Amino acid sequence: MLNQWWNQYWTKFVLVGAVVGAAWGLSQTQGAVLEETYFYLTRPLQFRTRRPPDWLSSSQVLELQERLLEAEAQNATLNDLLSTIEDRGKKGEILIPAPIIGRSADQWWQQIRLGRGQRHGIERGAAVTGAGGLVGYVVQSTPNTSKVLLISDPSSSVGAMVVRTRAQGYVRGKATDQVEMSFFDKDPGVKAGDVVVTSASSTLFLPGIPIGIVKEVQPNASPVPKAVIQLNAPIGRLEWVTVSPLRSFAAPEASSTPTPTAPATPENP
Image (cartoon, rainbow, N blue to C red):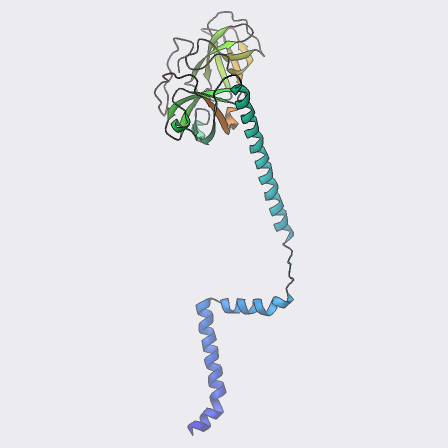
């Protein structure tokens, strides 16, 4: 009777076991077996070289174009930096190129962090310049990084001179790409378009470093005549700067928020 039952129902028994086993296998593999089976069954029908969708091709082309533009921009920046170093090197100046690696949004016009430090010859008090002219000076230096107080910081004060009239004064930052120059003379004879550079009385910078161009003159300002100076260096967009360790001065102690004091000399950072 057992043999007769097996001969009559063995196919159904095996089929039920196969279904149960398949269901268990699918639950354990989360359908991976079906995906693999479908792949191999439909593989002969697939093209050997499938063309990616148009949107994917367009996105890839756009990415490559943007990467190329960024590489060209960086290459142009580094070429300009190298040219500046070579030109000023012929005059006996020593310049250390340094990338800007840190800049906080709330102190965008006050401070920057450089990826060079004492190991590269950068010490506190070193002058920092960029494309166009003066950027600031180093207020703190570690073995591998440096912190720079920007000329645009309201607490920064730099001795300056108008090239055409030789009128002297000092410039103070306004947290923008413009600075304010206060003159020592009651009638400096300055007009819009005059060139402003660091003065010989500066205690932090060599004389003659370009600062900017006079944009507006305020002869009736109190207590002394003033002028608005448009900075030459694009401080808000800089990626690289050069540091000049030629002159070693005792710069003020660095602090997170420098406290301005009334200038008694052309320069009182």
